[in-house]
Length: 384
Ligand code: SF4
Ligand code: SF4
Image 1 (cartoon, rainbow, N blue to C red):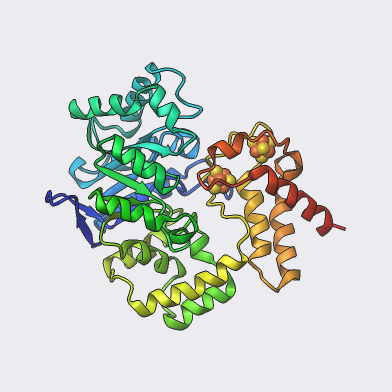
Image 2 (cartoon, protein in one colour; image 1 turned 180 degrees about the vertical axis):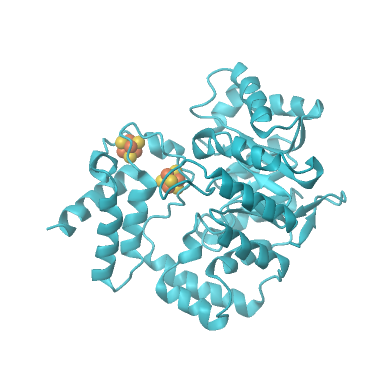
């Protein structure tokens, strides 16, 4: 069974592996439509191995993630699982009455009458004014008083200053941050962790594998990890990194197939915190990878409301496949062209009108139009 951690000395035990609902199995490569049969099998297996934390959000998989996981969980006793879901902001809240509407719809989607963990979704400098304008925290506190939410928290995509501010302003039961070995320094998650630790706010971890990036890395980095432990998957290093921090309650993994789930379950059944030597190994692999990675996109698809319908994460993935090939430029260019030309013409970088709508939604603060221009120029040269 996967190992568990205790929520705030309460006796409540949460599985160290959390089931993330952002990248569920799909009916076809690149499709957002969820394969319910596969998902059902994965949920059954996860529960049989002691996974008891299931996380999703109102907008994942075009709004179908919650109901599909809810359906898959409906055959299991309620005490076997915890549900974590989130209240959206930008693009979803137009008035205070939307809050009740969304919250009630979520209860129906999940087929439950209360939530175990509930979060303000994606708190950052862009979304905070929306949460404030519609008094979202007060609304959710009231739901908590009514017994409809057990623990109230927030997911966070900004810097330490805002984290200090929001945790000083409101009384949260937990916080969800993007803790992984790349962002520890890249996005100063180190300071975020310190702030939450000092305030004794339990941490749930999102993107421990950074949207799958740290499961694949680049050839040289993978070799470094394999030389030390040939049996361990690349993803398991990243999951163990996140879980090695004692204040972490659960590590969410967005799993798309049974193989990934079984690998992750094995990691957390036999979990041991990373040793000093293993941390040095990760540092070596990370330094090489960071030098090659151009665009830190996690494929979260928060930016997908592009008016030109550009497949932004797929465009970025194609360019990263080139940069991560390092000195093997010819192979890198082939990788890029293969991935880029699969996209239908309207979904490519040249359709960008630089409207900047995507940048407001991007939790990684990527200058999307800038990169669209770079990638379009690169493509033109690559096909010459
Ligand atoms: S800036 Fe470009 S990629 Fe971003 S939303 Fe506008 S058209 Fe789409
Ligand atoms: S560009 Fe930003 S918002 Fe869009 S998928 Fe990548 S990380 Fe997510």
